[in-house]
Image 1 (cartoon, each protein chain N blue to C red):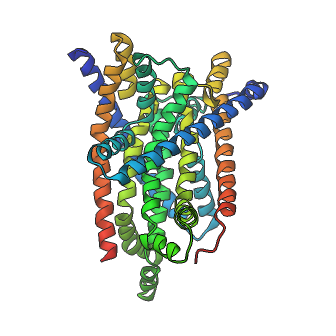
Image 2: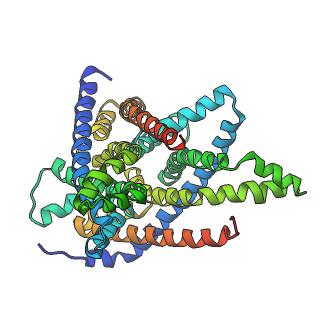
Image 3: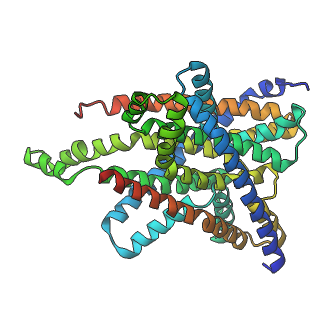
Length: 220
Length: 214
């Protein structure tokens, strides 16, 4: 057995761009997921029968089918609807829809964790409605769900690897191209695994640091 | 889509179930080992377990499949594709289940350990007879949740080229040029397997929450 990692080190520039692609997919996917999450929770809180049913069905379908099947379905469904998007945009859409279903569950839990008395107490103290929402409802709710959202973001970052199946531009598809040219499968994927590990450890560390700063106020 | 294509999908479905069952069974056995190492007092056992869990939770399942799939032959293990995939899924499951059960073991109230010590139970019996049965009950909702995740995860074997449900779907879709119908049916098949499990997991969780607030 001889291992030759030079094929990987020689392609470091392509890999670096792959990392950029992966991070962009993750960030835009997460942004879309947050929009869907907040929108979904708003619909659920309005408590109308049909919209609630639709949002619940969306969450259940996404959570109980594999991402790979979802991305294939979207990839082939869009052209039928007369929409032509490049694979990378399609990947962001799929990641956003998938992450959105999980975000709805997380955000709903956070909003429900703020008791109504807290709003009333804020108003009784003479704060404006806007201030009450910002400091007394939103901030503690965000603080409560921040760890879950952080893990969700890391999970989404790891999920981007699957987007190689529709040839979106990200780290794994870059790796597959190097593999196709050099036939050094093990070396390529071993290195990619290491890069993903570094990405998720750094992201975890950065998100924790941001969380400590953003939500630093005495809550006890 | 005719009977022939549908039968082909069902054949793939069977492999999805086989992969899930093997991965889950292996994951239970090795996951228990990982969990016990993770809660051990000895750093020689604890630190490798932390590393193992971090490695599998910090990298994509797809990379884990690739590394095992291409790595095993390099190290002289000439195994069939399904065995390589099952091996990777087992390792993946052992890390996730190990972490779930670590949490459950540590969630058993400290008084239980202290009571067992006060009764003079040896440490082995303390773990096997007192902590593990209670931890098992606590961990059930999360364990069922992971089973759903694993079942969905087996679809990634399709990218390695192994013909399970998703790969069978890709092949049929290419043959009859009806990707929406085929992936719709494949999606429904996954949903019919995963949804009941998810509902069961939620049911367990609710029952447990009710028990705690009592």
